Amino acid sequence: MPHIFTYGSLMFDPVWSRVVDGSYDRCEALLQGYDRKGVRHEVYPVIVPSTIHSLVQGIVYLDVSSSDLAKLDRFEGEYFFRKKEQAVTPDMKILPVEVFVLKEEYYAIISSGKWDPEHFSTTGIHFFIHTYMDTDKQ
Image (cartoon, one colour):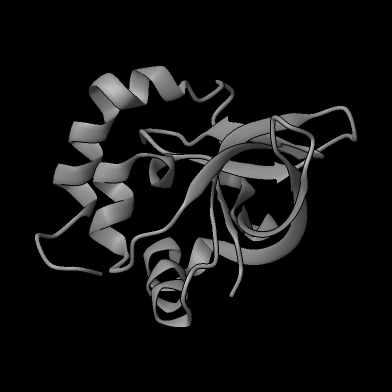
């Protein structure tokens, strides 16, 4: 079962727990070679390939079931593809992960600004849940 690296709305339990059914161990990690960008007129981010010096901080959910992986694929939708990568934990452990990366044909949605996880956790998450999440699982 794959480990899933999350870098945006799915890092936050109120979103994650509305998408998946399972309960998973999680840890902080860094993903090298990507930039996290804001999306025009939205509160969620995307990641895109960048230089080897670029890092994205996120949360890895460990051993995600195939049924929950299918739910995550539906949640992320057509704008993203799932890619195998490696993330590094704070104790320098290397984890094989899968991560949702913005497809190149959708780069036009990227805003010039960076995405702020703290702002999302206090303000954006409420808008996101109200706008994108049903009371039912995806």
